Length: 423
Ligand SMILES: Cc1cc2nc3c(=O)[nH]c(=O)nc-3n(C[C@H](O)[C@H](O)[C@H](O)COP(=O)(O)OP(=O)(O)OC[C@H]3O[C@@H](n4cnc5c(N)ncnc54)[C@H](O)[C@@H]3O)c2cc1C
Image (cartoon, rainbow, N blue to C red; front, side, top):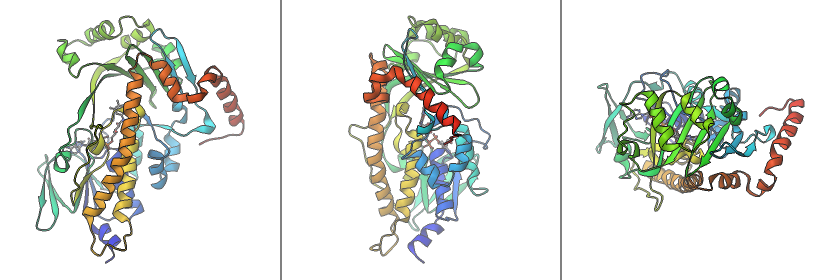
């Protein structure tokens, strides 16, 4: 049996049906014809609500995966290229940059998380995902090199290769390395607004179907329109890890109205009323998200195992300011597949350990860049001069013509509309 045939026959168990795990399963089945791929997921079924922001897929990572996995046509039907527009304002509501979506240059189309998850789930063979399988523990079997994985529901599965894809709070990570996540210095308060066009028309207009930043005083709002028409809002604050707890104000015990007042008084006291109005119109609940990341100085690489590895956030949690987490998880899937199936004429015996080691080295190099870029973006967003620094980041030397950009974009878009252009 050739080495490739051997890999196709392996029992591969992926733990976690997030974007990273589902992407890997898709490539294993569709591109490589692997027969024994199982994804286990703690959610009870596919209808579990997926919260969170809309996200953009990047050309060299997320979109590369989508195209390679033959999902681009389906993706085109549900993505929102207009979500690429960007507006930046300060705490007084003064607009510093408007950069509408330029249709012919659509490089990072947006998609809602729920839509992306459905696209990936539907791309797998029936019964690939075992729902309601909450990972508890695993035990390596030295005699035959397999691993027995046990779940909360009392069942267990034996696998030749285990892939941890269970996100930032991974329970697989401790079996692979001893990396602990570090607090990034930033806590987000997340909430949503329904009917934004009616209840907060000024901000709705500034969001312009895409992404809006309001930044001053080392903090700011990051606001996005989602596919369901709601606004999702992150209030991003440079604070100690336990600032809410230590302020003696427990979000879980307080009335929603009291939490709104707490945020207005403690975070936004001298901010324009258009931002305070966002809080007045928030729908329950407020979610607090202290952000964590793997260490980058120095970045810790680990000694590879022979039958277990990590992809996505379980391998490399990074802060979300450059929008790279999901994209890098999809790139992991591509790299892991390439390393697993690489033709190596010098390899006499199939050597899984060597292949996992190669994948991990590639992944670490890529993540170093993505992590540093994300940390830089985090610093910019929380700088006292954030608005100008962010304009520099988005426009570079074009910043000198930033006031012309909206006119130029609308003109080019109307030309492309008349030719019926689509991505
Ligand atoms: C506020 C915020 C905004 C972000 N914005 C962006 C963005 O714009 N673009 C971008 O690319 N990234 C963004 N990210 C990062 C992105 O969300 C993550 O990088 C991405 O979700 C990681 O994918 P994953 O598949 O590795 O893990 P996850 O998406 O966390 O999926 C892990 C899966 O494993 C399951 N699971 C967990 N534990 C177990 C267990 N014990 N047993 C079984 N199953 C389990 C979970 O239910 C889940 O389905 C953002 C993150 C945050 C916090």
